[in-house]
Image (cartoon, rainbow, N blue to C red; front, side, top):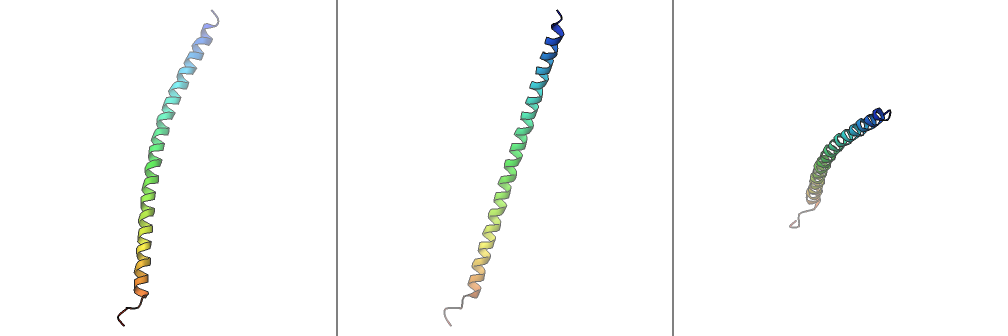
Amino acid sequence: MPYLPTVVLVAIGLLLLVVLLVRTAKVLRGFKQTASMVATNTQDRVGLVRARSAALRVAFAQRRRKPENQ
């Protein structure tokens, strides 16, 4: 029975590998969720900045235009 310690060590190694893979998968899921939230927030803010700059362009164009009555 000299192979029994080897089998026990292999079983323990596989168990540790499975535990580490499960924990890594949980961390990666959390990271993916956080990255998605950050991307959404950034896109929202970029949209607001674009809308504000468009509004400023319209306001400047209206100020430069001469009144049509005069």
